[in-house]
Amino acid sequence: MAEKKFASQADLEAKKISWERLSDNAYAYTAEGDPNTGVIIGDDAVMIIDATATPVAAQGVIQKVREITDKPIKYVVLTHYHAVRVLGASGYQGEGLQQIIASQDTRDLIVERGQQDMDSEIGRFPRLFQAVESVPGLTWPTLTFQGEMTLWLGQLEVKIQQIGRGHTKGDTIVYLPSQNICFSGDLVEADAACYTGDAYLADWPQTLDKLAAFGFDKLVPGRGPALTTPAAVQKGLAYTRDFVSTLYTSAQEAVALGLDLNACMKHTRKAMDPKFAQVFIYEHCLPFDVTRAHDEASGIRDPRIWTAERDTQMWHELQKETP
Image (cartoon, rainbow, N blue to C red; front, side, top):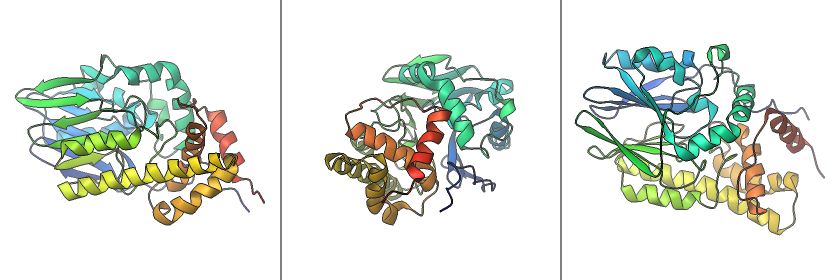
């Protein structure tokens, strides 16, 4: 049997961009399962939530913002450290950028594994990293926080908060209390697989419970369409919880049975494929997801660092046919 192309190397078709107005101040820039970007337009400045993969890709967001306002784009918030979210930040330098904001945990992850992650993700996502030569290097936060912080864009209050571990240990949400709108990063997905290669799978469902307790009316997930009603938000949270829980429970069962990684993959597919095989980037994510789930179920609390070499080694190992 021919081996599947690694990660998203076969995914070369351009995705349709959607630009959706959620309120007078909040917008969602989404693209059929590609990483989403959030935009908040305040009284005196603009905030970007997640910066796209390259400065060239960021120009698409800037173009949409400039159709609405000429206010300076002063702030870029990183919901977590992954390269597809952060390496486009330098594209905002000419637009009035003053601060790149992230949790201290996110900065710590960039210190620890940012370069390896950058090299690894560029290999996984050739389409998203077109014009990769425009990336000047790692994106470093200029302002970090622990727990939560509040920023005022004139009279508009913006809350930036860590509510728990999930997709990474640095996960950050951004929300507008006055409008009950949230930008969740990859803590929540809609119609897309959850990438869990750097996840805390045992923690993630409780973090989603905390997110659900806010009762947001609208939420922009990390991937997939904006969720624009309370019912859609609840559905997105339930979908993400189901994905993460099914994955981790399957891995726990596999480890209890003494199954190796390859057998764990087959066991996990029995539960996952019927529910999730049709969603965006499922086949890309699953090998990374099962590897992390098997690790965590085996007692490896903190995610191991992915390198380009480890990526391909794992991929080939999991493509092997076993009796």
